[in-house]
Image (cartoon, rainbow, N blue to C red; front, side, top):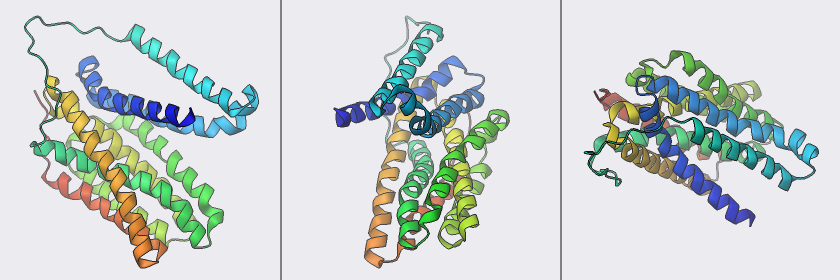
Length: 288
């Protein structure tokens, strides 16, 4: 039952994420960056708070881990009902042509967006996975909790900051290029730094990957025609999460083949160039 529920939850997340950019375009067409930052801020807080509160607060309060799942699940149901009741209703056009649903995989834009977002996803998820194993292997297990907390909590300031500064930022190349180089420096800090540098680098990497996520999620509704936003977003997520699956595998192979724990971070560091290079050639021209 637990495995089945996990699969169903993953399916729900997979449906929700590509659905949000089209909703932003439909509900807030003149405030796309701000609306994207708002809902991404909710996603990140919803990711961090349940993890932080479940064991110390919710489980003792409700008497067990199964009941804690009911608490968080009930909250999700309440949010769904609020959205259903308060969401703007679309105005149907009698002459509207049927919408296409399959992405245009020949579009260079799809691959550029997917690879750029994939660099952030891969860097975040792979670092989350390998930090405990790397620190345990190198005799620094005492830093595991602090490093993981910094990596995950570091996302929150980025989501809050971008609520106020997103206007036009997502349409410029330099934030992605700078973020790529900062991510590369953070990976180096995790591998070669002392405890302070390791924890600070983890926090900054969490900040950077969250900033990339927010900026990237604003691009499909900004760059695509209204009838194509859902296809662009779905394809972008497909490519990006493929990167998030492939890179940890490559990191594990690099560690196993070399016998050197730090080699696990080589593919993670190289992900920075998956952000930098496409950003240099991406034509960011908003759809009018």
